[in-house]
Length: 116
Image 1 (spheres, rainbow, N blue to C red):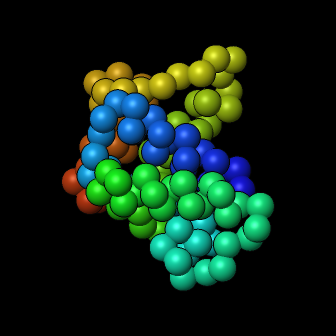
Image 2: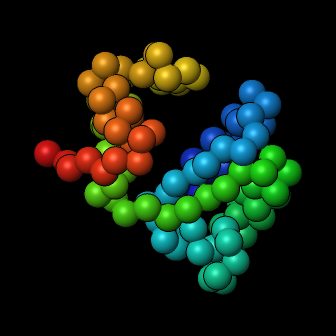
């Protein structure tokens, strides 16, 4: 449920910033399947999943499942957020912390990275 709420928040942020055609990757196969309609939705998550589906369609976003090992950039940013006493929001690639930059470039090129 927490990841679904985070996805919904991200989609709403995209809508506020008028972004369309955003490609979303999630490590949660359950959330992914619920969103694309391959699984039944737990009743508690139903309103959230429905909102996500609506925002996906309205803004031509896409969502796909990726394995945890392929999500280095997200993992590094999550660790940064977990160790920080404030909230960081990065609206531009140039503002991403330098220790993430190389992994981000690899990700953008479609090159897999190996976790340490």
